Image 1 (cartoon, rainbow, N blue to C red):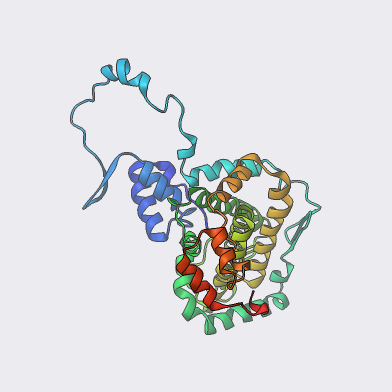
Image 2 (tube, helix red, strand yellow):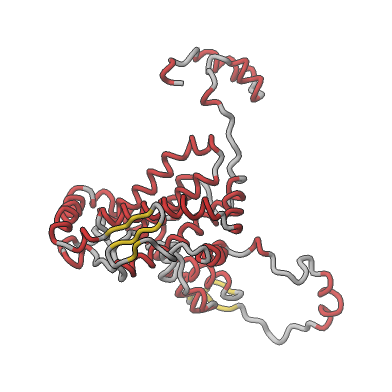
Length: 360
């Protein structure tokens, strides 16, 4: 599962050392729900003024008492930020908790058409886990996992291990971004993790499907089997939800550049959980279905103010590139006129001549 932990809620030394080290070593993101992003960033960074020593993280010593009387009279009234906390400085993983509360209030799980321990139907979503509860249904799923273990796991093990706790690094690498360069986009990814985590856990609790390794221990999973149910795959749900949120945020021609790769990364993260022996293919498909349902039936239609504003704000971090791809490389004068290119580049472009029609 990918998410953000509560280790940081304990703050300071506990949050810093346990959250920071656990969150750091386990990767921050799903080191998240298990003590990562909140534990590492919130506990480590916000747990108090700290410094790194040979013994770990420790509070900076202050001798005596800081006198504040002069501050009350002179500096206090002139503090540049006034008496209000700057909301824009709230860490992304904490902002996501506010977005989660907003989303939870939409009634996304209330009043379904069908709700049993094998089926859930509401709007465009129709989930059924019954095939994973019979031998006949499980056999082809397990055969797929054995085949993936034998044929693909060796090549994917490093990915599987890192993505268990730090899929964010893959999104950041794919998009050539960081929380510093594109903070709103990073916040949107964190929101996708957080909302997806909550939604997935609700469905896991409803269906309570055992993990593959419970039935077939010889799968020898790439990482220890998580201690929660299998159906649906939260990695799949969260990754496809993040992909959809990113595509909603980006301008159309940026989506042309990145859209296919964004969706491919979401699918690969989900598939890696199968190759690692952690999820059935049916789990991954269910996660993808839930993500599409959330995007189409809830996020698009309800347009909750805080999440929708974050989507729009993230979009401003992706300025539309020049639409060179649709231009004729032989039309050097036209390109130069529209993009102010130097004469040398104009001549170089002209030397390419016209592209074949099928390559435009």
